[in-house]
Length: 275
Image (cartoon, rainbow, N blue to C red; front, top):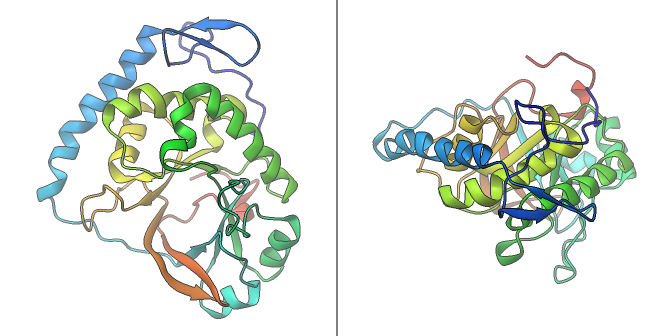
């Protein structure tokens, strides 16, 4: 299924989203929040917390990588350099650079870059992140999710991304369960309203992936280690970011990621059945 979702529907068929009691839906009017939905995500946080509490003493899960991907923003290494370094491909930003981050010359991915990667036999995965810290995209809740998803989709398609492949929305933080229920869940619902749940990925730490999976949000997960128990790899993760700012490829600083599942959202799987 492609990017044709225009609303989020609850089980009773009514349009719902979670946030403050009344918020603008971005179309000039206001919609009431479903308390049932808010309680659902709060309950998911409580349920997931039971499992999270045991992680500190649990045996670390093995990270049985199927190969590695690079991600980068400070430049664009050549496809030949990525391939020569032994990587499967790249996770690339389909998001604009922030005005205060002019060093991010690798944002956004262009069609010519994507073409060079695919022609070299390399895989491409789409990721979105504009703000960070106090300006993190998810802090805007549902309305921000819709806004950023529309821009991410525009850049994804402009770069040649298939309409049936996911975009990973970034939660580049170590949020609390309360922040998940009140801001992150609505933010992801905003993404799902634009590109569909089946095409919504989440870049987050293992606790946030646990919360999202319990709540039924997103279908693709890319784990980072900030706030993740040392050595733990979430069993739902498709990709695991294992090293940041310590490697270079073709003179460009890159992050290293292990691939954990055969289908991790790569463009080349367009049209294939999801297993």
